[in-house]
Length: 317
Image 1 (cartoon, rainbow, N blue to C red):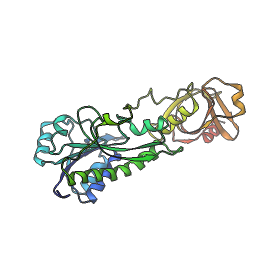
Image 2: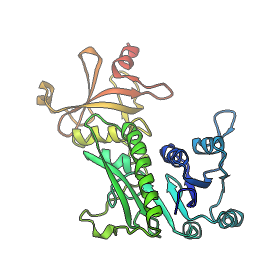
Image 3: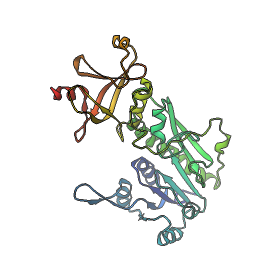
Image 4: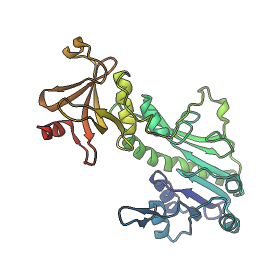
């Protein structure tokens, strides 16, 4: 089978999926339709905003489908009419069986982790929050249980000590595009490429649950490195948060965007209670943790833009 014979339906919404779509189109693959979320009202004027996936698809003359419900009869009927050979899902919603079973060769997914590690909604965030030094991407066949299908290909990516989720996300989405093309080429070479069952991997499955107010809060009774990794894994979005009570000022909820672990200092001999704030020379803002201090480098006060901790402290004078 050739590129132009393999009829692909591409399903995606988030920007993570954009390089992969571009790679398919620019590589001459036959994308017969793009499925993405409906346009959403945004901003004060509630003007409808389309996803970047839709913008690109329209610019390339691709058919765009935007069902509110993925079980919608008209949507499913249109998919049947398109006669897809292969479905591809990247950063999209949970698909009902009636959709992912429809393509002749099934549906594959590009996931931002080395499965079976980090099954779930936020794999890149959790890899960094857990202090991993490596992550990657996986292509796999869809089946009923979330992120459990047979693995087709994996590629690895190192995580540097100063990486945050924004940096790793951007590198992973470029790596993922290359991995996805190699995976599609497997279907051109043999229509039923064999995958590897996730149960055959030595590593046990780990979850990557949705980010919530509870699991993004910085709790100062935790070790310094744990808190630092939490900040890295949530920056720049959605960002870790904490309530800081600076002496002489009302407690406020801040987004914490950049930190530095302080594990050796004369101030550690004082053994302050976790959560104690120290204002250090040169506008340094330290918060006591279970085993040291976390120096806050960049933060975002309520209703303001992100700024350095020193700039914020200068503004309090």
